[in-house]
Image 1 (cartoon, rainbow, N blue to C red):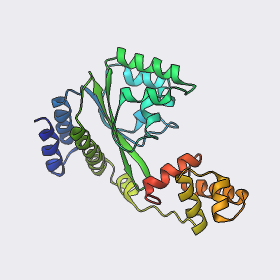
Image 2 (cartoon, rainbow, N blue to C red; image 1 turned 180 degrees about the vertical axis):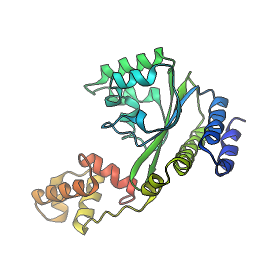
Image 3 (spheres, rainbow, N blue to C red; image 1 turned 60 degrees about the vertical axis):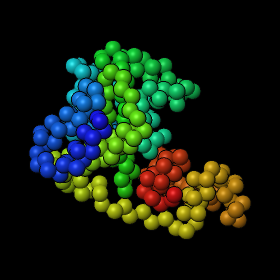
Length: 246
């Protein structure tokens, strides 16, 4: 069974003492599954070029340069979808999530462009840690169907390969990403954040806590600053990933 290739790789990953040997072994596993192209990428964000953070990868000729030139990182549905998913997902499942997005047409053009370069479909497996999203394993090419069990194994593969590559290439970054996060929220801030995660508005939270909506908004602003969040939804996502709420 193909899934045994992942299990065997995960069981021996610490035996690879060089980046080259580890990448060769990873590519053997991906080849067994029919993934021609892939990338192990650290911390992809819309504000930076993820191609500069590649720990390992193989792409179609000319695609990386075209991706940068077209500034696809700003509208890449796979990167955008990372904010909505805690586990692996299929490329073709991302576009429907943005049916009302003002950049939907540009996303569709990017998907067509990628298809013409041999990137017809694939998967993204996010890796989260104490500091939120740490990186991804992305694999694709010709369409491949993974079973639920294989999706779970690839999620494990993504986490393991990212950390092992960081061990071999940049131990300082590895230690920084794995260090504890010191976020100190007050009792009121924690209460407000918990209710926000439950979908309550400022007015509803204010009624429960018997304070003004203005005070709730003040707490929310403080939470966003402490979590370095762009908005309330982002704050909730970060809080879940940091284990502050569950």
